[in-house]
Image (cartoon, rainbow, N blue to C red; front, side, top):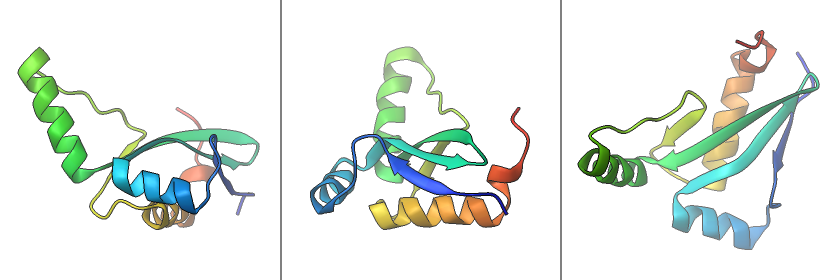
Length: 97
């Protein structure tokens, strides 16, 4: 299995964890694995539904890219659990597209 480290561009502490839970959105988390960087966005189901509804009303569609993960229980711990789960399935060992 490759090396693996989770990073946060803006750092992570108890205050930031609280802010993540309140915002229900995070786009500054990334993983370094085998000297490659994988960037992710996490969003809660509720916030995604709100943003999708607004976008569809405004533009007629809503686009979510392939590196966006929707979480039912949005928290720092759930983000880390998701990334660890991706690691255990070999996600970070695959060849880039």
